[in-house]
Image (cartoon, rainbow, N blue to C red):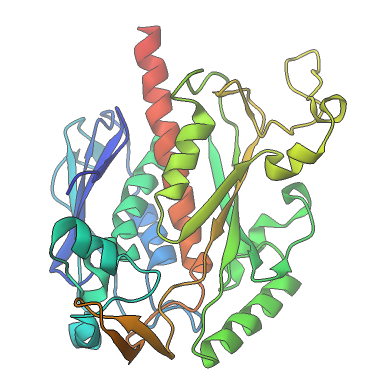
Length: 354
């Protein structure tokens, strides 16, 4: 299986399956001398871990990260950082019923067709549990980036949407509610809606908005390695993501150029920011903001019809512990992937200047 690494200079390679002994990774290219706050890294893991509220999967995992290399006396050494997150609460028997059949809209069928074999326990390598490794690496990337601020929040659940631009929202509210949205009143509505969806044995999708502030001018390359292209790839690599738009996004297609152009101030900043902080594939110093659309989780706790390995129609029902809506736990994953992209481009810029 290829494609287990992300990044060019600041590179993350991950390993492990949802129901294996552990997940983990190697972070290569992290500069030396970075003082790491290990408690801050664990807090990021706690934001992503299962079982943290009544509206997420009730799998109980501490998601404690153990570091094995690349850190000495609290600082990075410049050598590969190896880490692991041990699985402690697998219930593989919950997946025995899909050993020989395929769940609709999962990776089951394509895994069998591509590899001729699959780990059906919790989805194996295709499980979103793999993203725990990304959060570890992203937490380290955040500490490397220092002054850059990366904030993600849930901006919609189903048809419940925040109707204010991010500048008018209260980011302090994000970690005060289980949905991780930036509006206290909407948080209550979204939470109740997700609970109702769960009672029905169904799932619902949503959108996460991410805002990156204090980005230096000049990150990104103007042809294939555009900053927004790499951010798009990063976000689309997250499980259940179906769409990515930055700046004015699809709404910009309905505007006239005379309205859409970002006019300059004398200091090089712009009066508007329809560009989303990126022009010509390169950061311009303005806020970078983008939306990521997540589909409803494919596992339904309902009876459904599917096919088995021989192509026969069979009836089965979803079992196990699953998120009725993935977006609350995906917020730290979005932030982590954004941090990995920016850290990589910061190092690339240093190389170019040398």
